[in-house]
View 1 (cartoon, rainbow, N blue to C red):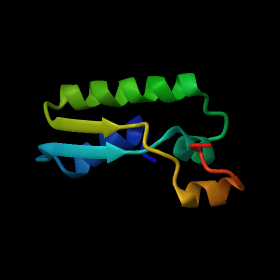
View 2 (view 1 turned 180 degrees about the vertical axis):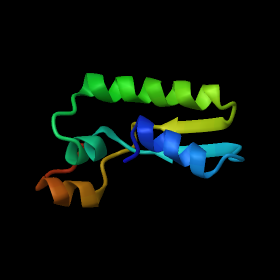
View 3 (view 1 turned 135 degrees about the vertical axis):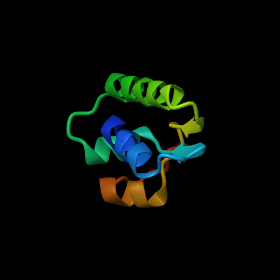
Length: 83
């Protein structure tokens, strides 16, 4: 997953970027970054949205995508997230 510094780096690598679509979910961050809470995740969403607004590009942040099969397997989860 990309955190705010990753978005800054992405914008530096692609200075002429006009549109960005990003999809993730809490489980991605939870499995990657130790100690991430839902509150921290929500704050990260807002921080990224602010970065995108400051660069005047079309940004579509989809931060609540369903958990994937790969994420369930990595986390050792046996049930589906919609159950």
